[in-house]
Image (cartoon, rainbow, N blue to C red; front, side, top):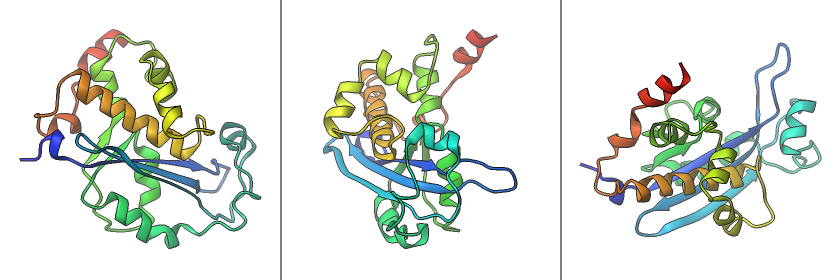
Length: 200
């Protein structure tokens, strides 16, 4: 049985071009960060991703990425070896993992997982908090300085910064609730019933 203390985790975050009428969204930046209870944070990695799709005004306002930034960036498929090396045999972490799962569908049958969603875990851990967005959680839990120390000169809605924030949030949950010896399945299906009750 895999326990949390023996599991290697890799957080992943994508920034996107934004949705436009009649077009599917496309990734423009990826960031990953690994963590284990023995080694702490390791192997932070970031890359822009080339896309022919226009970056919407609303998306650019959020993350600040322009087509000029993507001029020499590799296409998503060319990043496969680097992504595979970081995610294979790791528990994959994301905050609200819908976007990350969707963009990884570019690689059919990749087999990554299990998936750990820090949004759902934080709702189970702190159901009373008014917001469980990644930024609000890190601010209310005092984690921002630690994230910034690990990735200086970056900020929210940078794919690496958000990936590191997710992994630091996961670390806090494992440490604060003393989950080291718990099975990995503890984090796969967190009990969010208290959070739902407080919303009704």
